[in-house]
Amino acid sequence: MTEDRTTDETDGGADERAGESDLEYTATELMVTTAARELRDDESVLVGVGVPNLACNLAKRTHAPDLRMIYESGTIDSDPSSLPLSIGDPVLATGAVGVVPMFEGFSKYLQAGRIDVGFLGGAQIDRRGNINSTVIGDYEDPTVRLPGSGGACEIASNAHRTLVITPHQKRRFPEEVDFVTSPGYVGGREGREELGLRGGPEAIITDLAVMRFDEAGELYVDTLHPDVSREDVQEATGWDLAFADDVGTTSIPTAEELRLLREDLDPEGVYLE
Image 1 (cartoon, rainbow, N blue to C red):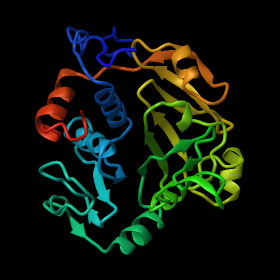
Image 2: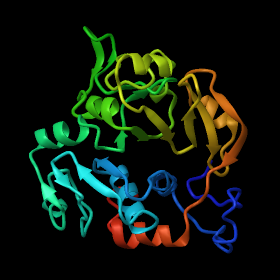
Image 3: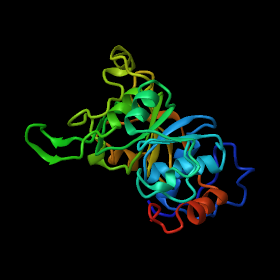
Image 4: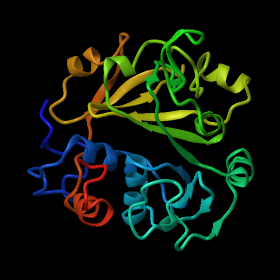
């Protein structure tokens, strides 16, 4: 698989993107644009920095102008004029509807069920969407001690749906995580409901594919990125991965999406390179 890819359209949008199939783009740019398209207008989304931040700001500048971005630092309905480098970057307060203490952001917004979408990441993600950002190995005597939950467990438990953007590597996708930091479909969809958790993971977007969850709450491959084979994805996954009966091809970025990413959102290539 090469870093720059081209493809024919398979999602019915070929007319809109005619002449763009020869565009060059990176794996990160494809992940960002794919994640941005998962967001809907007039939703509230809890945003972190990095690639998820690019996806949210791209969505707001394209198909979701009324997307309400809420950052963990407590800025409500942010509309940053430039790329924030941390959740405490003052640029997030510019144009925001409000700035509240972090406690209030989590209690009155997230825990109260007012967040539609949350972005998550972690060191390990298993077949049920459970995420580990605590330890690699045994908890009492780990091989690696990781940063821990932060707000991730609260996001995974209370947002109405969650999205994950991550590189696709076998070490990141074991059949079972070493520690459940952020719950996915623990014990299946029914098990999650029994625990009283809202929502659940909806999609995992990697540099190889887009994966979603079936009725039992297990991952399957929905679309493969251009020039990626089933074998590529399976080799990078720690269990016998399921594929949709009609696996599609992930839509490539448009010229306008690439322009916004490269010239407006991340002209210095902080996250895109």
